[in-house]
Image 1 (cartoon, one colour):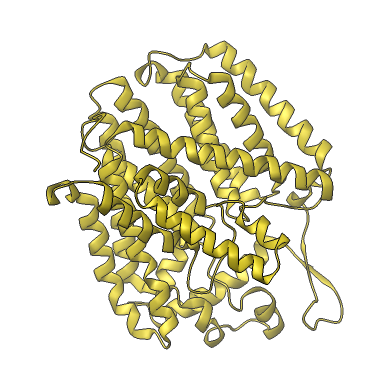
Image 2 (tube, helix red, strand yellow):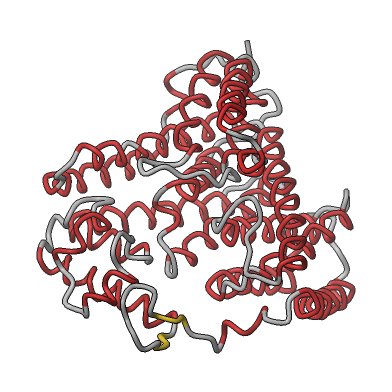
Length: 440
């Protein structure tokens, strides 16, 4: 599934049509096996094909729902969770922003909120079986590792800034995968060195993406995880690595990753000083504008949009369509760096598009997620539950930190991956069972 973008480049139009039919056939057959559907759903995160109305993973959430209904017996009580209440509150508070929609496409794009709800609700039910959690984490790790290999190959062969077959979302996937592999490496003896290799490879790939925001958020998460290990690591697993060995291994890892990154691509760290060139749309004399400045141009326009409708916003996912009504910067700069783009910062996007009402609901929802993630750790009855609860807490922490610098978690594959993490938080509120419910 994740290799579809590569295959589409090699096939002609008739071949692509045949590939589409094959994918639909496999998806239909997978409905009879929930685990297979779950694996394919995670694989869609790595399909770098985006449509104006959404991403393949948002659509595939419907297949995941169908597979769940076909393969599981359940009671309505199993769907009860407090997080859903806070999410529905958020939905109610953003509904007024829909009044600013001017085209049917806006409504279609907003349907991804339903996919998000379906994903975290279903994962919240099935992941109370620890085997499902392991399946989710391992599938994501394997696909992240394969993309890392492809990315490294592309970086070595081209010397350009690349992201692998998963596309630019991989900079966020890599952070998630680094946390998972590091946690397994530290706290689980089984396949410890395999996880260390995964950690090294994915971390190297992340460096080669030359994405500073992802470096900062991933580095912060790794630093805090290591700090926690040195302070209270024995609480989360009876099997863990020697502290002094870990210090040596992480030091060696940092040296190897930095050396290899520079060896593979000498330009890897140049983006700390480089600027973007402006001129492709009508500026006769080339000028240079730092990346941060280009973001400020977007944020300035987004703030103008917020001030025009501070209570209900300009419409969820609507800024990219209406930003032309609010810019006060130079027209050439607007067309170069703002037109057709989202605000590129999660909290600013929510504030701009849903106003103070929607922003309040969003903050309440995020707060609830953090509170429940912490409660899962405190209420864990054994080290297995504490291990997974703590791991999922760090995944949520990474996403929250990343939201400070990007809006990728509000739509597309990022939204669906966030839905999986939210679902894991919900599942960890329940006692672990190896066979919680019956698969038909």
